[in-house]
Length: 448
Image 1 (cartoon, rainbow, N blue to C red):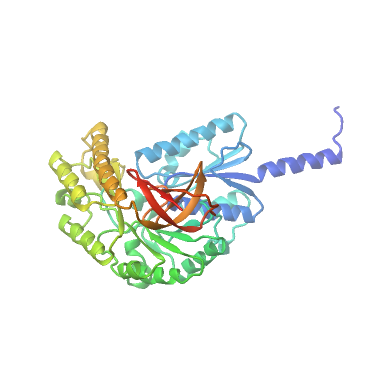
Image 2: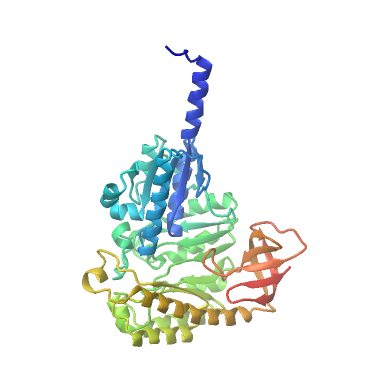
């Protein structure tokens, strides 16, 4: 018989493996809404004694939870590739457990179970308690509004609703998230106060559709009232609005943008297209004339506002004529910020069931590139007009010889930045009055 293990060695071994099993790496893919979900999960696990990390490249976590995206083809492929990378790590003994959650898992759970049996368990988008239970942690409902921030500590996202009631023909999100559910104002204020207590100064309001906020819960749109109450929270200096649907636009937010210094003169309003025929086919319930009227009204009521939009090119039925119309529309509207996606033919959507996806991917990408080339020129002109101005900039980080920040007209990760040269030492999250001395297509250079 082998030598009997001493009680000390047994206890040391037990503690070693207990510590190993207490570290969890949560990997987030996709949009900022997913990031919020991951932050809620991280807080739940941390409070139960787990050591948690986010998007870590270290290989000392025994459990990996992958929060997936299932929006379009590219996002789905990224999610699958990420899962397979961790499957390989598990097969090589570098991690013990893999769990997959989020939109891809919600949409394709049965298929994924069959195709990737190495994953220990799949969870949907709203399975927070089940994930916590799976890890034998204690689920605490009081922590839902007290997240572990994964962004730089001076800004954070505030998700004001789940789901979507719109029926855009190309979009699979409502199939995953279900009907629109506004979060109560008092709960969002509680969450905002918790974020402010952590040092958050900039709050990015997000939802699949902020234009619908409150209608399901209060019987009327309450976005303006929500923003006004959030602006009263001490510590919050900037409030930024993302993803306003053009139809039934909440005009009450415009006076707030104009008058309330805490509400950024910035709005993300995806218009997707301008051709009436394409918009009708997309089930957007808005016309080109109505879109132009809305954009002009926003700019009239909020001078100097930066409008960000998203376009979809290569949609079924988008002819060369309609694409040319879209290009002319972009040149006419001169959006300050713009992104574009090639159309992805998503299963079970209205477009998938009713239209044939005949346009080759290479043509879709060429159209997307052509739009961005136009936008690059527009952006360069807009950026150049800011040279000589002094702008309020929030400092995000230090990079080489520069401090890097953003104006109120720029959202993290998707918009341009300001590169500041100074002999002073600047704190992350501080606001400085930076004098713009040079511009590039999307970025600005300043002195302070």
